[in-house]
Image 1: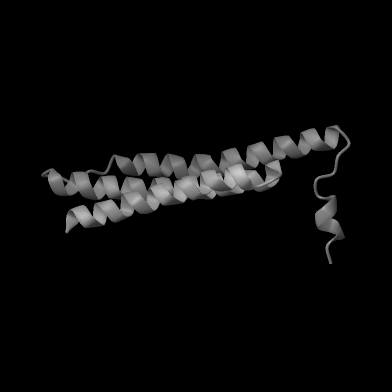
Image 2: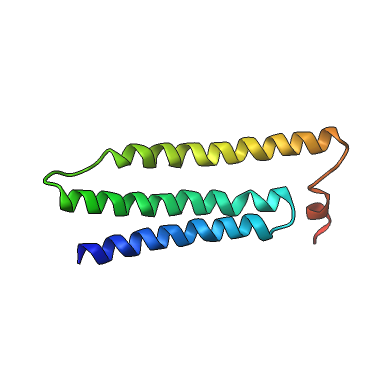
Length: 108
């Protein structure tokens, strides 16, 4: 039973990371491209880490919790990196005289 749970968690995490990568390839602008990999990486990595914790806790004789440290760092660093990239791109676009948010302001 444990193998099925671990397999489902790891496959679901891998699928989310794949979908985020697919979004990176298919979307048009930088601002659209940056969102799917961020969400896919955060949730996908979390599922893979949970699967790893379940597997190594069940096969070992003690709870394995050091993966929690990886999860905390991923949860904190991924959104921060996302915001820094978007702000840098927005600053660059504004310095070049472009307004990437102009189309959003036109929408009713």
